[in-house]
Length: 516
Ligand code: HXC
Image 1 (cartoon, rainbow, N blue to C red):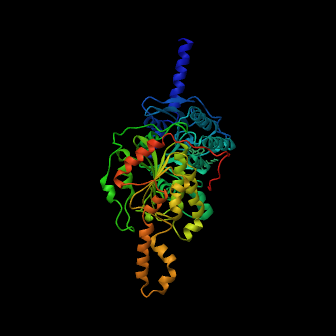
Image 2: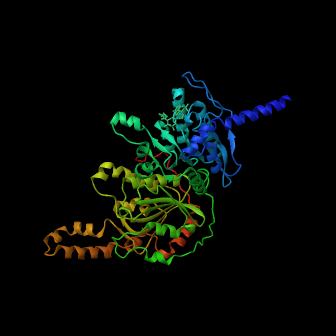
Image 3: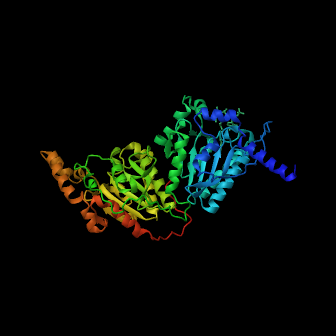
């Protein structure tokens, strides 16, 4: 046998050893938990045969606690491949090897693909399934996490970063996904928490399961940590592919154009009747969103969190847009702490990645009450105000009904330099709603009246005629055009075309100080 042949055989054996390092038993255990293996996940995520793996032969140093066993690949598969022909960088933690725990070599592999992703300008996707810092490696494991966090921050706003939680993610390890742009969680098999149930029990004497503490449901409805939850690994990987289709590869590029063969001049007469004649009645804003977008395709972000505001990605004339819309069907579409945080972060993502922003406005104001005030509605509301004001991408707003007070200003108004503002004839643009306004301005008259309700109703009517319409704002030029609802789609597409070459100047500063 030639020495060349021996070397080839050695390489073959080592590669085989790396691929099967966890062994069939643990692979089976992974399947029994309803989870795919790290490699199976990558096969589904990436285009067929597009995966190029790095560091197959890399090994860790072994632990400091006597057991010096090392594994080829050190518990994470890294490399690059394509999604719909576009390059992405990936890492996929292998729970079958030391619980996917993160040691020095494991982290170096992740850092290598993160560095390359930034260098070539391609998204980085992390499939997380790990027991966290590898305990045997002590401070080296902690240092390794620090290197990843550092890169997450440096890559933020440069390339899209997507995290997918497909198993445990505990302790400080949660901070890497939480810095990234989007977090997916798989239902019933993933969880995230800073301290697990046993520590909670010790410190607070509370009994709580992993699922109730940090499962997909909790993070998608209560904490807002997860942007998407998906029923299983297969669907999750499909959804990541869908998300990538809306995004540019980096901050210097635009999202790919995808022609869904939907006429840009398509009208929808039903929109003329979407707004109920009683302004106190609700309706579902999704009807408008689905009507205007190409092919009614909408990828909603944070769909189960702060449902009083809707954020998500769609296409108009083939071009990706970010939509921020108040939802009158939930809490009357009011802005509260969670809604402000949710929309603020989404707006900043779109602005960082050249995705034009469209706001669909029907907002009665900010949520009143001590819960919201004490919870920080002033600073949270300011986040959304800051985010819209700071955004330099093309910005278009359509006021479909209520636009009251500070919430009117915050929701991408002309006054914070939105580029083009439309209103439907049903728009009501005023400092506050008719009842509240009448009760403040005519307090003395109402108090002195024999029939106060009659006076209130008369004064409300008068107020409504004067302010609860878009015409005063249009006279001032705060609204560029009052449009027929049925034509909304074509107005938006034409305006996006016009704004395509928008230029903007950056302030000469290190960075602003958003009220985080
Ligand atoms: C080393 C680990 C490990 C870890 C799991 N394993 N987590 N080894 N370091 N962090 C090993 C287990 O010993 C086991 O090895 C194998 O992985 C599979 O784990 P199991 O416990 O058998 O699996 P399961 O029952 O599914 O439980 C999974 C688990 C549990 C819930 C994740 O392993 C666990 O609680 N691990 C510790 C989690 C943790 O506290 N991590 C540190 C978080 S703090 P064998 O040889 O028996 O098969 C942190 C700090 C980050 O990460 C700081 C960043 C700044």
